[in-house]
Length: 387
Image (cartoon, rainbow, N blue to C red; front, side, top):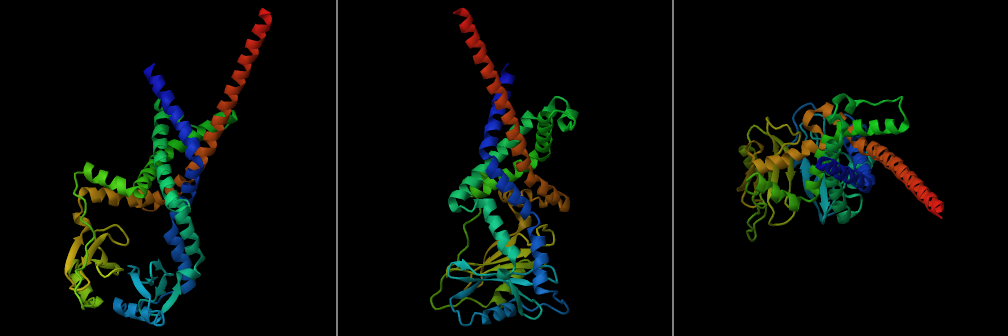
């Protein structure tokens, strides 16, 4: 009896969460599918704009590339360089992001072998398109309010997946849980599609939902993850010590210090200080690191060159490793190309599940309404008979 009551409760919870969060889940899912191969699509279209980069010879030093870019903004002294990405691919451009006040400008694509600016992101439609898709995915294009709504919806999607797994009929007979009877009544076919699509994608929807919730509410979830894993929270962002009258060190000297920290690593990204007290942050990719851009950092005092902090991905505490695992779990990169293709279909699942779930709710509603009418009719007949 208790088991039936519990199942009925889970069923109602599953149904009402699905109806409540369905449309938002569809938006998040479809945009997520579009973003799975964002990098490959953007790279293809980028090379159509800038052509082929001949990679004969050595790349120019980073400081030379930056000087070339700075000359393009000679007449705009309020424009600074915010960051530069150095790709590991020999035929890829260096990407420089200028910044004006508190706003990033269009990314500039620079030939790393001759320093020529060969394009910018403003001229690539796909970049503008994907920037809108990305904002729609994580904030529903509604700013901070949308950011919170998307985070709550992500958590509800996770709960929806768990309740769906509990309700899956395959627990009674495994084969029935994966069978779709196409020659049955439409009501049965609809149910079969719902149960199969749900169980195949449930784990992945739960993972993407949970990680999305944790990201959107990181101020709340990160301390919990650190506490559960008995990990001391990472130290606050390193700061440079202000020295009156002293200007920041040359980048070439800073890079020597940083490279000495990770001698076998590949330079990935340089994040320049935005404020006088900020540190210079340099990102590296270690040979053992699976992330294409690297996950190890060196923070330097911009005035003295002192190493303020080193984040080595191979020595990361458990709490940080858990947080770092969210990215491959959310984007589906943990299994290479097969899981990324799978995640395209995972993104389509909320649409399929909402439609089939709504149809089931509609059938049930019609049946309940019909039974209610019959009961009222019988009661009316009974009263008339008594008269």
